[in-house]
Length: 67
Image 1 (cartoon, helix red, strand yellow):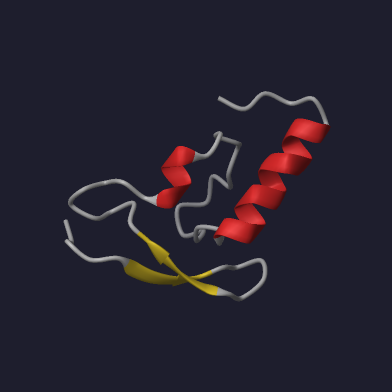
Image 2 (tube, rainbow, N blue to C red):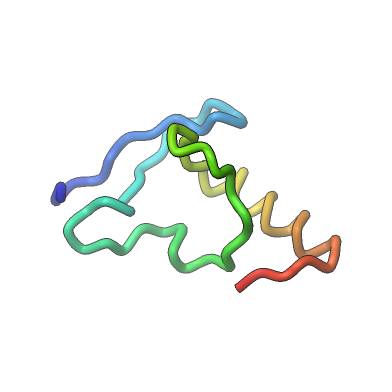
């Protein structure tokens, strides 16, 4: 496990952002947000904070569950 943030590029908007999901502390910003279904493709990249929050809002506005 890395001790540093991984630079990722959002597949939806192209923004570059820091991912800490695989960091030794395992405390990425996304883990603080409600969970929504994500692509099952293991090669799919994470969404940036803006796109992930938009996906969560869309999911919630349609009355779908978020954990």
